[in-house]
Length: 104
Image (tube, rainbow, N blue to C red; front, side, top):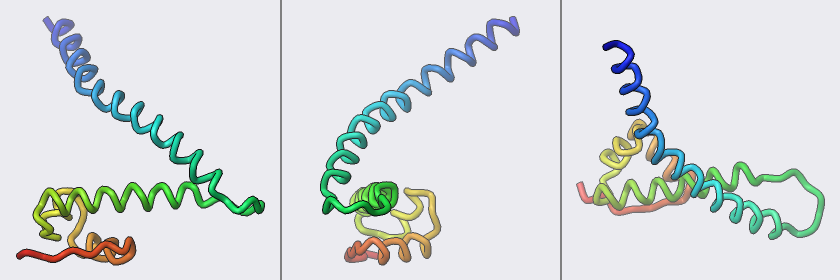
């Protein structure tokens, strides 16, 4: 019996992991396109790449906008949605240049 339960648990974990694998593959393809555009947009001079920083800022800005939209522009609810502290959320909003009207 224990073997069947072990197999069942392994199968359940594979089923749960599959959507994440598919999402990661889709994101990987998009990020490859994005990195190509960002790298080719340079001025032709040799300088230190900021690709990692630029992509992280874009992703974070999009996540914050999604969180705000899904939570009616309520910052504390949006912070909770993302799993971060409200104060951290507000600091990052300012850093990312995101403005919203708080309806609470």
